[in-house]
Image (tube, rainbow, N blue to C red; front, top):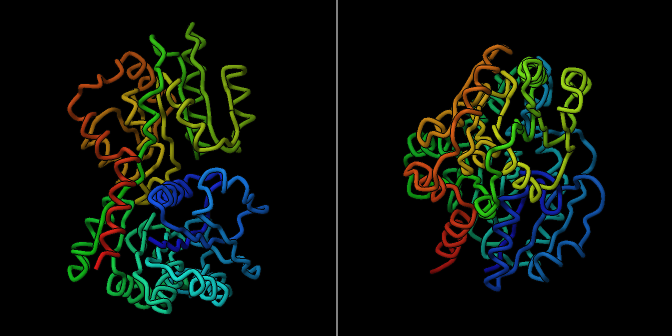
Length: 402
């Protein structure tokens, strides 16, 4: 198979958004296939030696040098009346349009069997459809995030004027793509109802957890440690620190460990907890499982705004696989569905420090789930990366088979 990937980022960028496509490229290469990755510049030059060391010569990465435009893919801070909101499907279309010629030349030279566009930004699907049509290849649209049903990406401000165009664009993706893959199960189920003509071509393939997460030894007894990975809303961070500080004043020795970019509330957390607050800074996704396995309680803390989206949190997926008691703060609807179906933790909305203190005490007193727990076993079968990527690969092979 010859697979052309269109993605915003790719290995070795330190971002969870790279994991899905990186693992799929690795799987295609393992079967003797060829992969060409076209992505935008994401800071610094790509180290092709690092890429070859992981994939061999089967995977090549080319950075498309778009002209600076400031175009974004949505989901960030918004102005009430921004002219870029009138661009459908998103402002990043300016960037992808500027490199479309280079991308087409690269695609024609590569002659792919499949063109796979992985959003966000959703304008990647505009280019994916174009390259698929110009090369006579199969086109797969991979939605890592929903589009119109998600508050982060649906038209807002001036964009409401072009809402019909946005709806037309989304419908055209389901009409034209040979397969549409949804990371988010809520999104996938919605799409099958909204676009029944594409139901047979819709797939649900969520992000998963790394297999080695299950091979890591969990300390017994569990450490007095609350582990948070990824984004951490400032209000949530401070409330967690206040709860832990109150417990420590009564003789506990509880640590708060944050894995990810330094939070703006860093100084406040240090003041509240002193040496009992540990911040690792940004680390590679491959290093995160060891940190998770050393937790006594695992916390996914979102801001209220983020919690109103439909995002399915990677950290929630990984946490629940461990069996370690988990707390979801301001979880999205997608995260809550995960918890309701499989169990493994509790949820809190806009919690006070007192409520968090009570939750931490409860979870620290809760045993790690047994490996024979039926819901945990089913969860690990449904969300193990090796199983999910194998399904993805087999679907692509079937798509190429006459």
